[in-house]
Length: 236
Image (cartoon, rainbow, N blue to C red; front, side, top):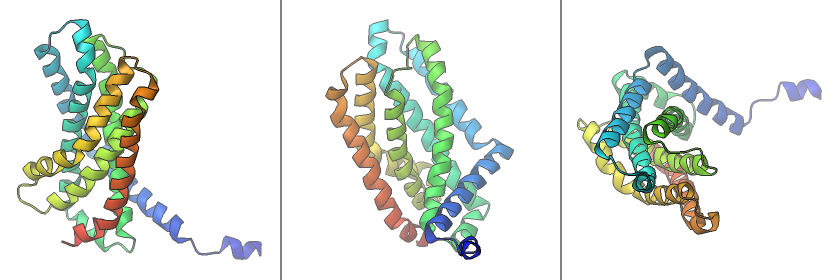
């Protein structure tokens, strides 16, 4: 009985998770060797912060009102660069065709790419937050803010990874992705900015609960939709 249990074939769920983990690990290992994608995202994010820092020489109270907007603009711009490059590298090196030929559910490829893109974006977030705090003399270590950032970035990357897979086949993919992405991700960015602003200004959680619920709903809906349509997207 025990021997039979040890030799039992892996379940479909465990196979799926292993495939997702393999895609994530492949992207992370490739980035550790090249440092192209993460380096470009970090430089771009820091440039955006510096531009805002010198352009918006405002008083402390006014700066507090625009903090959430500046942060999310930085995350979105740097994230778009990362999303574009993550799929373009796969296409240019011929790895995308190999992934699609692998004997696994193609949605595992999607979730693996989402996991890797989230890891890169969260590294940028972890570096940007303390630098922003120093440049703007603003305390960003507010309870709940990291949770809102996590929810917002999940929805952003979920949609962005799907659209990047669509745009990667086009010659103008660098221009096409932002055009496709920004209108679709706007319903997530607005609640993310509103909730972040409320938390930074000390607004009671009950007053921003609606925005957080909208973020959660957006994440769930678009993760499910992307899971359903990813196979058809990469077929085209």
